Amino acid sequence: MKKVLKLVPYPSYDIAGLSRWLEQNAENGSFLAAKPRFGIASFRRDQPERVKYRFVPATEKDYFGEHDESAAEIMKEFGWKYICKIGAFHLYVNKADAEEPFSDAYSASEAVDKAKREAVSSLYRILFIILYPIIINLTSSSIIPQFMIFPLWATVLYVLLIICATIATINEIVYFFRYKKAVFEGGEPKRVRAAYSQFLTFLLLILFVFSIVYTAVFLSSLDRKIPLDEFKGDLPFATLDDIFDGETLPVEQGLIERITGKPSPDNYVTENDYGYPAGRELDLHQHVESGENVFGLNVRYYETRTDAAARSVAKNLRKYFMLDAKEESDLFADAEKCMIREEDGGISILLARKNKVIYVSVYSDDMSPFPMTAEETAELYYKSIG
Amino acid sequence: MPKKPFEYLTEQMFYILMALNDGKKCGIEIVEYINAKTRGRVRLGPATLYTLLSKFEASSMINEVETDGRKRTYEITESGTELYLNEIERLRVCVRDADTV
Image (cartoon, rainbow over all chains, first blue to last red; front, side, top):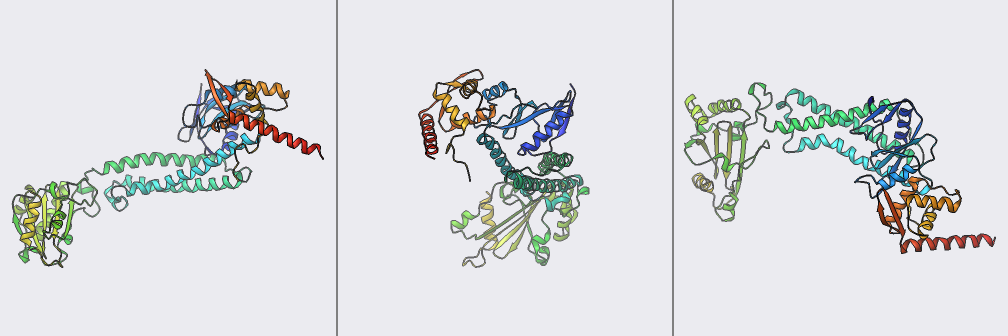
């Protein structure tokens, strides 16, 4: 038998609107075949017929679980055929001249009450729809400022997601208030044309699909390596401004010396500016507690996304640290090499390895009555990392 | 203002309790009982029937005592009987009041 798919034009709480829409479809030979999924309803084509669709609220017994078959049996005795559950209602169909399934005001009002509750709870859905792109943006690290590190189509996708969410939200809110004003006061809401509603349902569907795709893009981007050629934003690594603050170059100051051995980046990474997994925390605070006089700790960790980006860092390093080509090459070839800069009461360490540039600053409080010398701090630092 | 459950009984509620007060019954038997008792005057729609049965059961006015396939059989509880008798008394008072006019 031929099947047709149609977008459901009204929310599940507008049971009167949905009943009428289904009856109109039946008059045109389309009969709802199964429970609509994601706003799409499957219809079977048959001889046009005038029928009556009615929504009966689910009871406490079958709200979440299987349909109460005894209820369906009673309905069946009266000629009502069970179709499916939509939202908080069970949908039945009968001949157009069948008597109404509700025969007293109390039970009929239960259906209206249930629809009202459904309408109110739909506001939570609206909240979710509009907040979803924002929440996605805020998880882990902010996406919006990093648009440029995504491929263009992912950025376009995100913008479309925002547009869809906005339109869908406005539509849901307008529908809700129109419905509330009419139905809560005992009338019928003025409905827009089904085709218009279906278009908005279509937008919602796009939103849903985008959400999934966008989430996938977002998650995969966390580990994505972007070739430097494609990279258009600021490189996500430590700039030398972070380190030197426009002061005299450290080499000129004679403040840089190289040491060998000891620090391993995996052991002292504490902060990750891009939300990447970082190594275990450097716990210098224990030295503060034990009176060893380290009052402050500033550890920053930068990771370039590609080797090419790391090489770009190397160029900067070469420039600022006045390295020759061999020194530069050695620096990046050997993860064990690092640079140390002396600060007031502390040290800065710049360490480079294949695709990482790490800047660590450990310092004691200037106001401390026992300020540590750079050597003392360095010793303490190396002690702490074993 | 929210409805208070069973503050008053609709005709359908009253007759459902009457049917179960006369012995345990399943849904269809309740419908048949009410049809016979009221000679078709009180119509009990199927959605009304199971909405009310569900409400009564949730309020412990009736209990499900037997399930046979799709058929569920209910019996009235003490609270249900009390509610039913109170409603009879209320209706009697109403009629007496009307008779004095």
